[in-house]
Image (cartoon, rainbow, N blue to C red; front, side):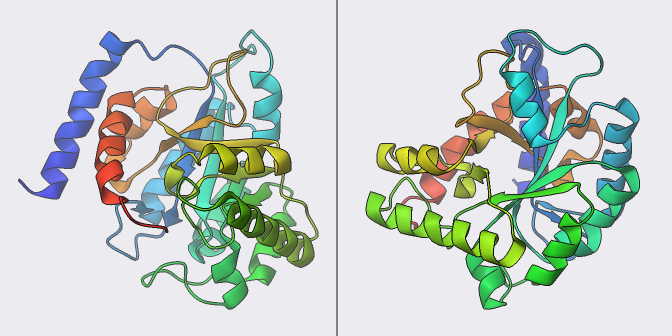
Length: 272
């Protein structure tokens, strides 16, 4: 069965399961990777699709910054008004500054970029088919006041299989570079591949940051969310607008359950 057909069937099954599973209400954190559609990656959204998604979010008036979201999640009751949504990006490819941020700025939407600092410091692409983000371009995006930069480790290493001492070194290198190059201390962290770390790694993260993000494709419930296990809903090109709307509403959890089973095998023995 072709991969695209299988992915579509998974999405249909996930949507069908939502009424049975009862996702409930809460704050949704969206996870993007790349924008521009210049590669075959499943998470490299065409600019037109990304723009349409952002315009829909802007029309709701519910997009908030990550800092504001964490404050809201500390309350046992949901805020009045539209459902709240947070926009986040992982990695730090050149299209973040070139393609994504201009859309965010036009619509005045805040976003957090979880940055892996080694590629940008070395001046090499995060992936072979990606453009390179520079420190100066990233500093320019922050000047808008809409972009917050968090840490995604230095070397994008998987923290569930790294010696705790090495975890601390990697995290500290990431923090030091962001402080030195951007003049800002990263307050938030996202685990590479959205895989939670070992107990020792989790302790190192808690000692350095105010929050930590994983995957989950579920809403974060008010008054009952651990800020160091912040759930996010990955957005793929195949989501289009139909499944994107479902994820904004807190649905499609079954898709993440199946992805975790696949990733457990996919990343077995890997370190990055």
